[in-house]
Image (tube, rainbow, N blue to C red; front, side, top):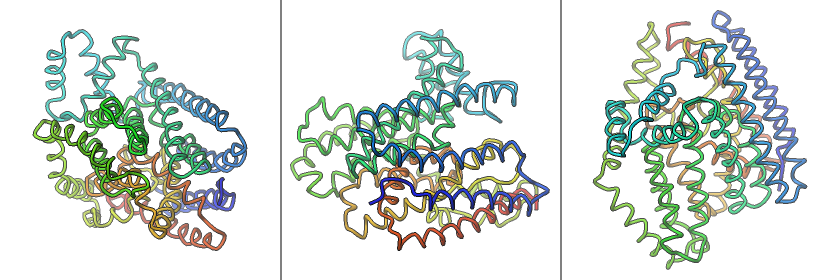
Amino acid sequence: MLNYLPKYFTTKAITLYIGVLVLVNVVFFAHALPILWWIFGIVEVVCFFYFSNLFTRQWSDFSPKYFYKKLFSTALILRVTWVLFSYLFFKYMTGQSFDFNTGDAKNYHEIAQSLIPLNGFNEIWEHLMKAQKGAGGVSDTGYVLYLTGVYRIVGDGLLIPRLLKALYSAITCVLIYRLAKRNFGEEVGRMAAIFCMLLPNLIYYSGLHLKEAEMVFLGVWFVERADLLIRNNKYTFLTVLPTLLIAASLFFFRTVLGATAIFALFSTILFSSKRVVSLNKRVVIMIWIGIAGAYLVGGRIAGDVETVWNAKTTNQDNTLKWRAKRQGGNALATKASGAIFAPLIFVIPFPTMVNTPNQEEMQLLNGGNYIKNIMAFFVMFALFRVIREKKWRDYILIGSFTIGYLVIIALSAFAQSERFHQPALPFLMIFAALGISKVTNNEKKYFKLYMAFIFVAIVGWSWFKLAGRGLT
């Protein structure tokens, strides 16, 4: 059983990235990626794979207590460094300390500012609903109210809220360690935590005024607490309530994420093996969740969930048609739908390695998306092994939360949106660590075949992006 990420994989992953980056930009030279995003991508890929190999080997000898401290401090330093750098970087590139083509981030900031002088919850809520013009529904209220609270305490500057995001993201790495260790053992727990610590996509949102860092933290916190709850022998109001409150809070950040949390909890109680949840435990927990569910049904949250679900097909079709028609785009873009995205949901989004208009964020994160593409091999390998060994019922909470959320994303208009994959990323790193721990020398050959697929897919995706904009 491996307790580290071998150089066999990291060296090949780095080589493939540089090779496909060069090829894509030679083939589509007229739309070559600006050199700045080459630098970002190479740093992301080389640092992730190099330090993943280094840290998973060197830190394996640390005591659990020292590893815990090292993990948190390193994760926090990385994120604080990025927050400070990105604050200045975005100001230099855009003239303001917001990301490129900022929309939601600046909107959250301005609405939160407008709520600061108001008093009384009813007044704040009424103003918030009016400011959002009904567009966000319940789903966006949590983050704006959170920002308002922070602004009232420390002022409405941009830096302190982002430093708090760095803290939440570092704590998320620790929670992933606890969760993975409890389910799969110390070795997998350490690898998963290190991957989360180094993953560029998780670090990136610490430096943005978006809700992803807080939302990912709440999602991981929910699953970690729920996992502990169902393995506990004592069920009281005080032990069950915190988990349900965290689940409820998710509805106020992204409605479908809250629904996924409730779905995962129900699935775990119904289908977990008796080793994890006894029959008596199932009855008690179901009663508590039933009470919480009864409160939600018929309310505004339930209405938001229904609206999102009913609109999923229409939204995806409209988005793809818009992409195909703009700037004389290729009609092939309309063919990409949930039927295509669903089988690839563990792998996508593919990196943006060509210069497409108004997609600076995706170009900046091209290395991060490539890392997800590569780690997806180990995710799928882990799921295959768990199913083959008939142990899936032991890990159904993590699996149902991750897969349930990704299925919703695959059937929505946001299957290729990196931002919407954020809540699943920490859990995918757990499965990636599990897959790495189970790979044998005889099975390494499949990684080479997978690399060939990724190579073709990235080149094809680059053409698709350009063709969909009429640029080929």
